[in-house]
Amino acid sequence: MFHHSTFENQARSSAAGSGLPPLNKPGQAPKKPPVILRERDLPALLAAAFDDLMSNPRIAGALLEEIDRALVVSAKADWTCVVVPGSKVLYQQGLDQPPRWTTLVMPASADKSNGMLSVLTTLGAGLLGLSKGQSISWDDRQGGSVRLEIIDVIDPVDRES
Image 1 (cartoon, rainbow, N blue to C red):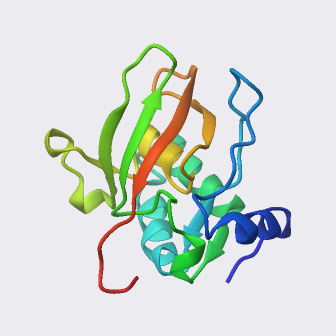
Image 2 (image 1 turned 30 degrees about the vertical axis):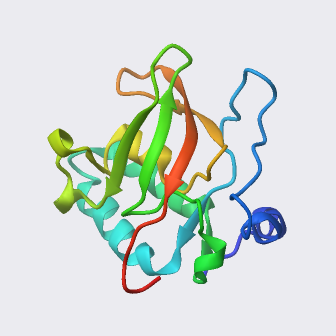
C-alpha cells in the first residue's frame, strides 16, 4: 500500500467528517490538493491508464500522476465523501457554469448520455480522489486551465464498502 506522509495525517484526522478541508485561498483553487484513492481501485485504475497510454497519453498520464500522488486507503472511514469510482458527484466547473451531477466510473461503464463519466476523461481524472469542499485547477481538453470544485459526494453503494 502506498502512503504519502505529507497527506496522511491531514487525511486521517478529517476523514471521519466531510473529507479533507479545502486548502483554497478565497477565489483560487490550488493546483494539486491532496487526493485519496481506495486500495481496491488501484489495479483497475492502473490497468485503465496503461491500456490508454499509447492512444491518449495526455489523459492517461494525468490519471497516472493522480494515482502516484494519492494517499491510498483501505478503510471506508478514510474515503467517505471522496470521489472514487462509483461515486455520484455534484461539481462545478469554472465560476460561471451551474453545478452538475455525474457518476464517476471505469471506462467500460462510461455512458455520457446517462451521466456516467469515465476516469479516463480530462474531467474524470480531475475529479478522482477529491473530497467534498475541495477544488483544483485542472487542465481542460483545450489545454487551458479550469477550476473544478466538489460540492457534494454520494458514496458508492457496493458490497465491499
